[in-house]
Length: 136
Image (cartoon, rainbow, N blue to C red; front, side, top):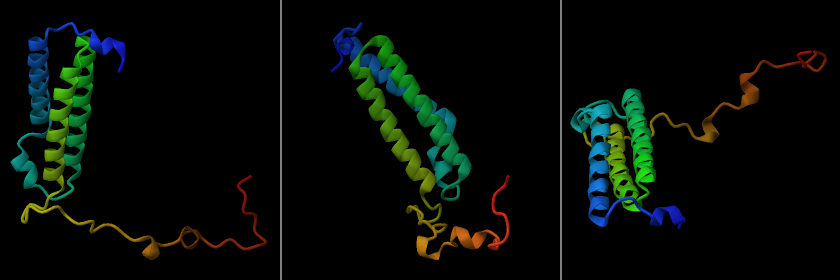
């Protein structure tokens, strides 16, 4: 473990309170960016706007947790804030990808297996042997 993480600027009880405060800040970031998860559950599965807001909240939360834990030089803040970020992101992913009527995760209905895909050669126009195929 890096040596700078052993030299926290906080006392043990301050370290735990800092971790809890960081977790509350992460919760606020998710709540501000995504809104109520019940509303996200009622949107269609895989909604692009909900996915974008979840990614934005995750990036902001990771940046905030990293900045606070590095400024305080405290691993407990990183552990508590990172754990809360992980749990909230897991809840948000489930809300975004679940079907609004059943509550179950949606299937990959847009997925096309490789055997059924159109080969690249069939997508391009056929070039004869006597034609110049180079762009120069």
